[in-house]
Length: 451
Image (cartoon, rainbow, N blue to C red; front, side, top):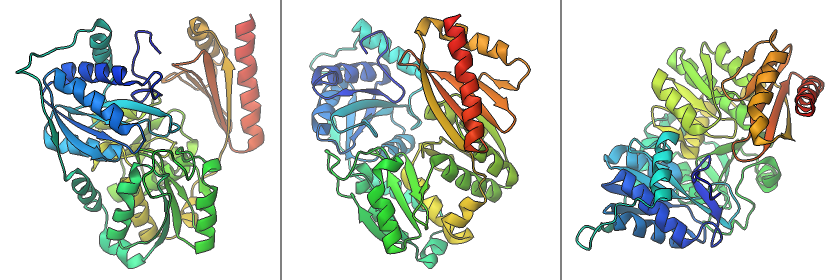
């Protein structure tokens, strides 16, 4: 990790007191503060190392003259909303999101509340590696100001964007699993304020994630699925460690993959808006485009990454956007992934349109085949170029890697930015089709590498 790149896909992350130690956190804080200047909001998720890393980051920020607004523990989107409405220089979130409890991380937030653009991260990295910190004398250091009210401010914003009367009238029963993360501080209260009959699971903040790992994948949510079935709930909701992503369980107790919940919400918002554009990465299932087109909208694809999706949404005035991992972006609220807003909107949709299982029946089903294949970094560009040449007669999208469309499906061959591998995602109308096109594309890549 100690090359000339510091930030990964979502901030600087590492194992605590290994890579992510107080010295690193101090220096990252100094670099971010040198870049941002002025007032900077700072918050954490609920990991056991939160206080240690926050203190080091705060020391770094104040040493270069920034005043730090210490918001305490918050969901990531709550910090982002506070930055957006406060007219300050930016924010720093201490979180490792869905990573195991031994990890922590540092994420920079721009002045408009969005995740920091990669071009700005590069400027911060330049300061960090050059040790070009704007060190102040004793009279010029900043101060740490404990700041309250950010959580209530955020909750009121979420509630203002849904029809509370309709939700309260529906008297929905919901099982909520916050994975012992930052959502525990927010989402149970939101459900109460919306009049839902809430059953909570792993909604006490605990930095070791004792209930289950904080990634809301199907294998981690067995207890949530069982409780939805046993209680006859209208839905289950699972959040990740910093509460920027939400995954749903339907009223039949079935795990809903993120692209399918994305399709449900996208179709509803397009219908409400009388049309419009939805933005999502090229890795998203075809079911989203099918649902959006049926509702009278259009889909535009981007490279993989929530900040890339959000900025494209801003550029074109999209009505909605998101990723297939449960990260949904609501532009009327803010341009970042938001689990609480996703939860509130899904409750409204179900209250208005009927059960989640009935809504999902309207979303076409596809099958996904995921693989990876080792490839030296220096050969990735050559492989992608030859893949394009091999499929010159097909429809090809080179937005991020190479996406090749076939009858009944597609394959995305995408190089990893951190490992010497290609990820090969293939989707088909049935399992056999997905496997067939995946086999074909994997065989081609192997032949190029061998030849």
